[in-house]
Image 1 (cartoon, rainbow, N blue to C red):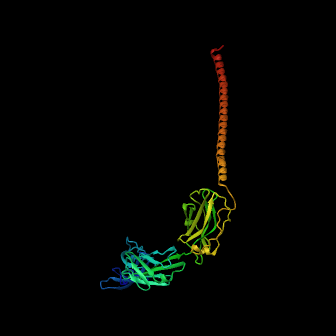
Image 2: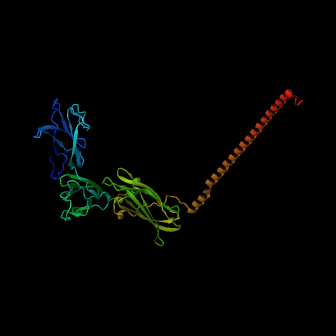
Image 3: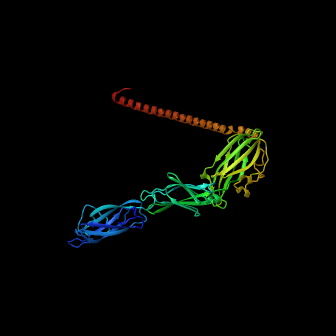
Length: 458
């Protein structure tokens, strides 16, 4: 057999088999052809041909097998099968066309070959992955590859970033720091930093990076990953703040636009802080977290329609300052313009506003115009005390209805029971009356019989 220096065969290599056996080329009695084949444990079969006869009278059979690309790594077992014309044994063989009168039986022996079809375990790319905000000059971190066959002691890693940055270095050794990149080796982990990204940050949008591993036998494998730089803050449309009840309600649609980049991280949380202006005390601070599975994706944005009730009640006749922050999944934050309200005091303001101002796409909240009309309530005046009065007035009505309805059903049930009892009573009386009549008739018949025979009752 011929193999690479490490003793492993790779896809495309040729394995040469040579088998020496006492079985002759043909049956000496009838010249029937004998056959030998090699069967690899992946199902591949290679027929061997008679080559020569040595000095001991044994025959030599040879053949070649090309290692396929689909074979798996590691030690592969092969079986040599011999089928002799006119000879049957208790050992089954798997010839498609066995020797005549052999019953597809014969003799077998086994051996092994070692196959190196790649890296056992590719590098595990740790970060960056997924969505991120501050990964514009990232450090690429990955766990080392594993190759238990030819090994990696003299192998190499090549790290690619956007096909613009490349670094090739040994799989182990001392840390590297040159003008292009730096490499830090840990026990099972490696960190790579391309210095060019520090002066020219990566743009927003999708980026790719990969690690190519070459083992001691020269076989390579590549592990890829993607990450998405999101630098666009979310916006809100149809925002509505309702302070007519004891606990304010906020609603609207939180939108995370794609911009020119085709994707975004999606909405993540909304934080509402209400501060009493008289003593600058924070009355309530609620953070509402958004389930990513509830976020909808359209052609140009990801959005989530929300409706939240604040956790604390606001005392009447007090002025409050309201600050609202909204963020996407990588913490790009949008500060809604601060506004003030007087709880319990009738207020007439504009209707809900849809934020379509271009500046809202800026990641800098300071660029948001502060003169934007802020909706507090719709154009109506509602007195809290009046609402409480009607609420308390109508609250018992459903329970009263249920009470009288159950009472009526109970009476109807009692009337039915009484009616059934009267019917049963009349039935019993009728039964005993008929029984009495039949008993009288029977006794009269008995009396007549005894009077005729014995002269009794005369």
